[in-house]
Image 1 (cartoon, one colour):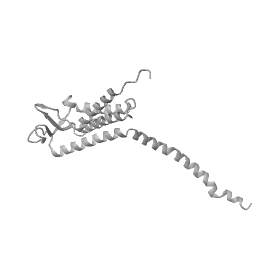
Image 2 (cartoon, helix red, strand yellow):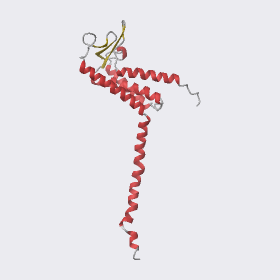
Image 3 (cartoon, one colour):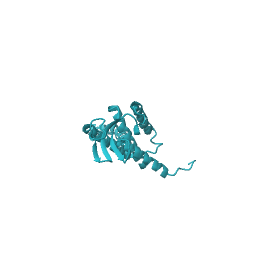
Image 4 (cartoon, one colour):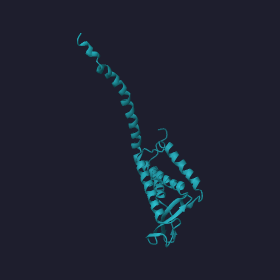
Length: 201
């Protein structure tokens, strides 16, 4: 009888209460964090390529804005990297590629937002977990976002890469345009390279 009170000590009574209170926390929090990390990890190449294109695009545009006044095109203002072939200029484009839809910057910005939202909601249908698709859409989305930032901040897209092929002058473009172009090419290459599954499977 002298040892019986020890079975009802405060430590004995509190031990099950502490273990019960900690059990839900240990069972619920890690799976949630783990699920988010797994989703981010599944799209890691998409974010890597999109971030790279966006970062390079915005950095190069800032350097051009700091170096050359707007509407600097042709000598003596431009910077000739390879005389007669490749120059750095600074022009504003309110349209799309090749100056299509010029003056429709707001409409093109809304179209860019719609495209990004559509890619997000249809990411599973697009097969965005596949590596080639992540690379193509990473390049594409990084380019779209880069030009979208320009339209919101500057009300035009900053173009600065100027190439001349003899008498032909290629339309001035930027890193974002290159990302979009290469991204589309990669996706087309992957689409034609991948055989279609037979219907009914």
